[in-house]
Length: 150
Image 1 (cartoon, rainbow, N blue to C red):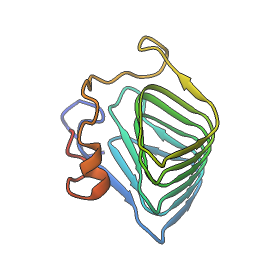
Image 2: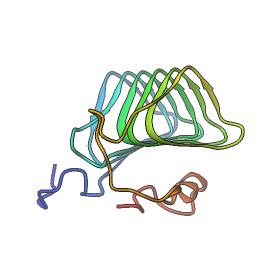
Image 3: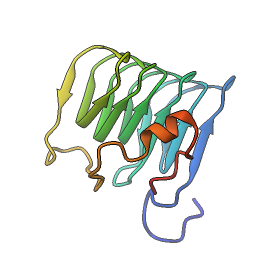
Image 4: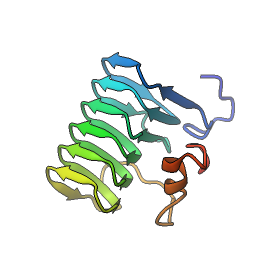
């Protein structure tokens, strides 16, 4: 909203849905969305951005998640569409299908649904991240802020 750089999604804006916060309805965003509370509705990143959704350990999403980069360590009831990278951490529970280009899954994570690979040239967005971890472990354990990979 206040970004004058002209680059969508690169503003580093972070939105937090804190613990004990509940949102009913669709969430549209650009930048970084961290969820510790509950969202009942779809989460959709603005097109042509390098946006990221992080569902933290106590976070719950009931609806579809659609973003270039998705990190889950909480509970998602619905399908996940990660155009670039999907990271499923050890405490994650996903009840739905996951659509991904790159996936990383820790021991202990649970997916109850289909795993559907999307080729790099498919309709969904691409990101230029090339490394496997990209600081995800540090985001999940709190030693690095979620916007560290901007």
